[in-house]
Length: 382
Length: 64
Image (cartoon, one colour):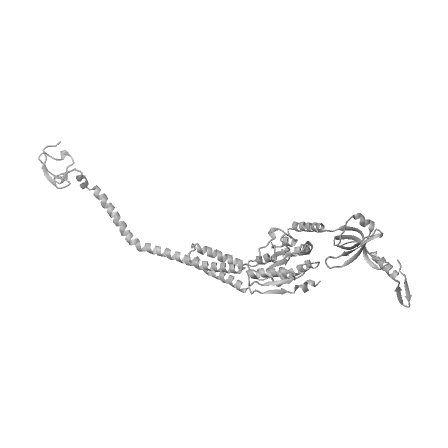
C-alpha cells in the first residue's frame, strides 16, 4: 500500500491518517503469536463489535491492549475475571482512528494453575527420565565444610535463619553469601549465576534458601536451567525453598532437601561442642588403650618371670613325689606285708624252703615271723 | 585427607587399642598415628575463622 506524503521543499510530511495507515500496514505483516498475561480492565458492550481488555505481565507490569471480535469472545464462555491468566493468539494491530497499538486476538485460552502444574509435571517427568533426581546421584554433605556457599534473596528472613542456625551450631563457620533475585523472571538465571559464582570462589557445600511464597513465586525454582544447574553443581547442594508442602523441582535435584532454611543451616555444619567432645573422647581412648596394651604386656612378662622363678622348686617337688610313689610300691611288694597276714618263712641252711622234699626229718630249720622267729627240727616230710 | 576421614581412622584406632589385643609394637605405632590424626582434626577445627562474607553477585547476575 502506498502512503502519500506532501512535500514541502525537500521535507516529506505525512498526514496523521497516512502515517497511521502506513504503520498499520507494516504491523499487519508481523506473524500471529501466542501472548501470555493477566486479564484486566475487561470492557464489553452489546453495542460494540469487539470486546476490549488489557493484558498485564505479572512479572514486570508491562501492559498490552487487546481487542477481540465480540462473537468469538462470547462463544468461548470463559467468564474471565480480573487477574485471570490467559494465552491470547493474535497479531499486532494499530487502531488507525486513534493511533492505538494493540493485539488483535483471534483466540483466547485460560491458562491457570492447572496448566502450570501440567507443564511442571511434564518437565519433572523429562528430568526424572534423565536420572537427574536419582538417589545414586545424591552426594553426602561434608562433615566439616571449609566454606559454605549461601544463595538467598535480600529478604532478611531466609538468610538470617540459615546464618543463625549455622553459627549457633558451629560458631567458627565460614560462609560466603550470594544475594540474588529469588522471584520474578530474572530469578532462575540469577540463581544459576550465583551458584556458579560461589563455586568459582571455592565453597564445599551450597545452601539455596528462599522463604515461603505463592506457587507462582516459587516457579523459578522449578525452572529447567536452575534445576539442571543444581544437579550439575560440582559440590553438594542443600535446597530449602518454600515451605514443607512445596516441592519445587530444585528440591528433587538437590543432594539434600531441607524443610526450612533453619534446618538447612543445621544440616551443613557439625555441632562444634559435640565434635570437640568426640575428638577429646577419642584422644582419651587413645591414651587409655595404649596404656592398657602396655599393662597387658607387662603382666604377661610378670607371669613368665614368675614361672621361670618357680621352675627349679617344682622340679624338686616332682622328684620327691616320684620317690614317694616308688617307696610305696616297694613296701607293698616286700614280704613283710605277707608275714603280717600270718605267713612264715622257713629257711634250711639259709635257703628258703619251698618244698617238703627239700628237708630231711631231724634237720634244723629257722622260721621267720612278722615279729621275731624261732629255730625248729623237722619231724617228718611228705 | 578430609576431616571425617581423619576422624574415622582415629576412632578405628581407638577401638583397636581398647580391645587391648594389639601387641606392644603395634600399639605404640597406633598411638603415634592416632595422635597425628587428632592433631590434624584439631588443626582443621582451629582453621575455621567464622567469616561471613558477601559475594557481589547481583552485579554479575545482571550482566547479559
